[in-house]
Length: 112
Image 1 (cartoon, one colour):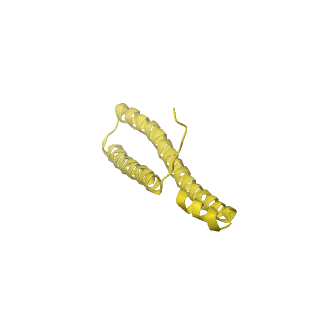
Image 2 (image 1 turned 60 degrees about the vertical axis):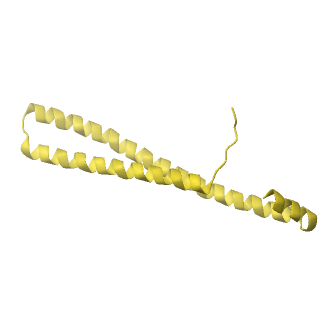
Image 3 (image 1 turned 180 degrees about the vertical axis):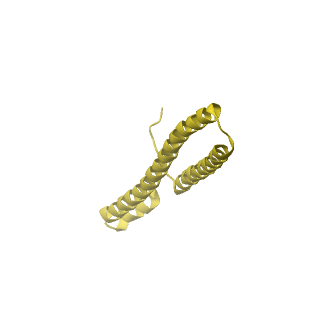
């Protein structure tokens, strides 16, 4: 199994876009559930209604926790992308100055 990891800007942006799309879809679902709950509270009475609404509230609490974790994942991926970009820039700057020009600089450019 290879332990190599390679980050690409395209890959990171694609990952963030996928997370944001999922987050948006989840928020849309939550909004729909909130609307259904509101309608049911107004139009449905009795023990069955209360049992259903109680279970719906428990589900909603779990769902909101999932949304919170999804947002945390998005933030971590975004911060990782920024950190990796800064690290790549630092490595490149160090490498360029370490070779000092002339033949070393030509080799560095060939490797980059």
